Length: 118
Image 1 (tube, rainbow, N blue to C red):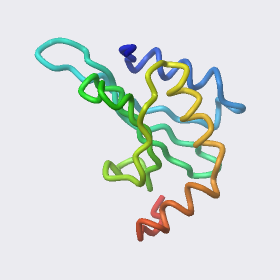
Image 2: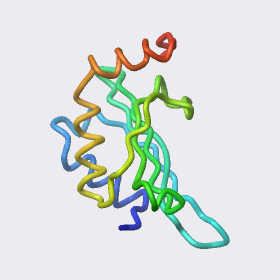
Image 3: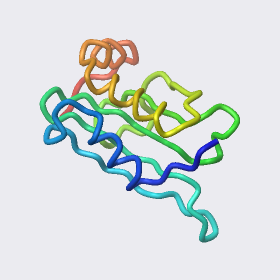
């Protein structure tokens, strides 16, 4: 599985969204004993409020990189996990599709009993 770090993922996401100016990416590399094993953080669409949590840490190697909707940029518990993304392209594609789907984000947040706090 491909190791994906913050700068590479951030640039790829901004390159693939319709309006890069509307997207705020806040990712940090994960360092374990001095080795970068991936990154985690949030991608937020400022216009719609849709927030996606991303984790590309190699600890998830057996199930793939993780993406999921989050209520806000502090919500690490999030909603349904979406795993199985093995490459940078798969992660970027999943994040981009999720950022553009406000109806799914709202439905998942309601399903988890969360109220929106921006």
